[in-house]
Length: 201
Image: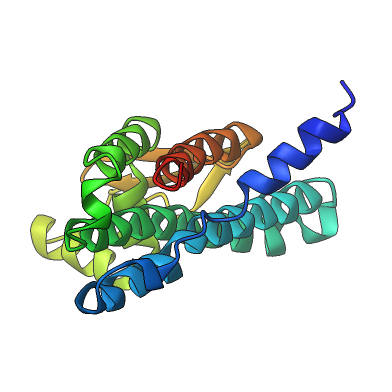
């Protein structure tokens, strides 16, 4: 279905973070407001980075000579960007909690709802990030725990279709490097942005 001009405009406008005028707040709160102003755009930035990873992954999958070189790069970077999106949510929540005046007009549970939605959609994201960021450390921890890694199957950034996999504490964990993941992140981001825009209404 072709997107109408109005639908395109609305979608593009939703990508921009809500405007917050720091001068409308007491001097003592402005540093906290500035932190929010810097943190909110990160949701869109990490979403865009994840979309770029998906584009690279799809391109690599269609090119046999590049598949085994570029697809793993896209998988690793996508895992990190997924976690960074979550980390940005947490930082926004902490900053909002410290903003006495703005926190009184933006629903207190907006970040709680957003993080709960993220956790439900991507339950393995945090563990995937830790293993990806510290692969040698994960292997060493596994060795110390089991005294031997002989016979242990360790999955490191393998993929089947659009499912990216790792092994963690004897089980498989995964996430989808797909358009569906982008849609879920978009819904979470838009919910946060809408709550802050309502503050201006």
